[in-house]
Amino acid sequence: MLNNWNIRFWEYNFQSPNWLWLLILVPVICWILLKRESKRQGDWKFSGNSETQRKFSTRWIMAVRRTSIVLQCFVLALLIAAMAKPFHWSSFDDFDENYKNGIDIIIAMDVSGSMLAMDFEPNRLEASKEVAKEFVDGRRGDRIGLVVYAGEAYTACPATLDYTILKKQIDKIGEENIEGGTAIGTGLGTAVTRLRSDSLQSKVIILLTDGSNNAGDIDPLTAAELARAKNIRVYTIGVGSNGEAPTPIATPFGIRYENQEVEIDEISLMKIAEITKGQYFRATNKEGLKEIYKEIEKLEKRKMLDQHYKSEPPATPMAFMNWALLIALLSFITNRFLFKTNE
Image: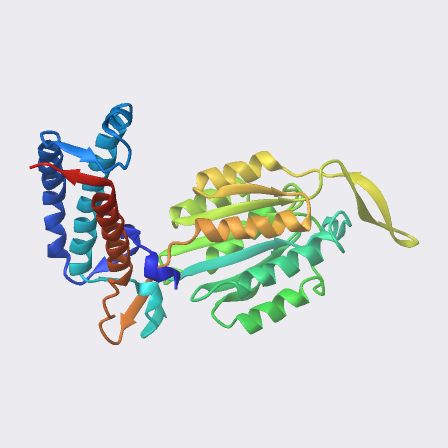
């Protein structure tokens, strides 16, 4: 029902756009009519005597007359737009969708022991896994892969369109026996190698960590330069609350939790993002991490939706006709019942 009154030109396409050239004449016609109106004589229809009528200022009466002329010209513009056969794609369902230009994405996730810190619910790692799966569910037409790293790195899932398998691999994170430490450079370098030369034009790595590089043979900035050489954008995410967080500590008597300072090498993460034309984010809680993934999704809205329409959509000029009729009626009532003219 609302579409019957929507005349926002920029939301429409036109089947016969050449009619729109006539809109150039509308301001010219409006100027001529206003010029003619300034030379006309007329009186406001009034039931009182002449003396009372003269007390009224004629300035506002002239303004009403000129407004009526402008409205009439607007009616003309609406009729021209209707002749151009406007239509709205959103109201037309007879099409196929083909997402050809997706994105290749690798999620590189830190799985070091500190990711078990409990400043996220239930901990950083489980929160990161849950949010990553939600991100995967929101994609369509993108190949997504998974690299996990601590003191070393490996590919848990190559870039794929099979999101079911990918999410199963995300669920398994934490079950692997992997060397301790945080090798950010190795994790990033492994992710870069997973984006092969046959990758899609848009290539992205989401690098998530809660610490600083203290293991591995590859410097994080060297890995960033490699990513830039392959035209890969890297979005870096620092995970951890401000201040201290309860962190698992291995002792001869088992695992116990101690409050430890959250130390994230934000400078290096910012430089990685800067080198690769990505962006750095800081997540201090689970909700913040969700918002970061949403922001990355907005930044990567580069895919083109190819819509192959099975038939030509019908013209929908009703909104323009409705407004033209309503405004013409108001203008007629104003002229008919308020004014009389002396030619």
